Length: 356
Image (tube, rainbow, N blue to C red):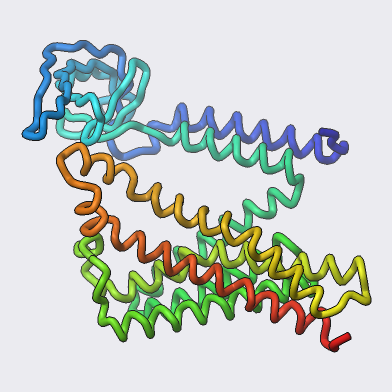
């Protein structure tokens, strides 16, 4: 992979910044208000195996953790903490010598993870630059900007703005900025933006109509029972935002393909374009639906395994806990399928206004 002189300089700057950021997180304990302890030794005092009513065994350890306080008024003092650790680490964490942990009331709260997080971010930035050069950095900046917009949206919601209206506005902003950054200002980008927004609006309307007609029957909302706001709005918003990325991907793919076909053959017929667009749509539809499926599956997989370990049947868990994820997946999949003809229709209107 050859890099130009300016790109090499930029890469060196990124690597130096990465090293500095990691060194900072390794020595930033004084910036935290909570006490931090560096673990010097871990000794097992007791160990037992507990069997639950379903016959599954779990090994527990009582550990004596010794370390030095690295910040605050007790900096430099030795701390000895008794810590219970489980083999599965469902409700506890596993620590090693050299780890830094947050402590309070002579008990371990959690691991200090900022160094690991920053290291992963640095690796991501370096790889993005190596593969996409400056466009990769622009993409990262776009992601950060979208995150700020999302945070700003949450602030508006807490001040009383309607959640669905807010999510619709954010969806338009996310779509427009993301596609302009990734594909530039051209007809295929404008086509993809219009297609994505139209597909999302139609998906939202369909979801509202179906849910109102069924009065939320058929979907178990136990997962959202902890909310102190109407779960209906949160559910609809999650459907819309969850499928937005996949819809954008489908729309830009269809729009780019149609633009490329017309550029290669100015005299290509509308019928041939429709046929090619449908073939492309079939090719990407399966992969994008699988992306949604595995994304929603991954969100519930840890709890799913825990439930099975504690005697839940698969059907019982799906009906009571995973039901809402299946609903999100099916609705998002409908959005993907709808976006294919919509993006094809809009692309043809933009790129080929007259029938050959």
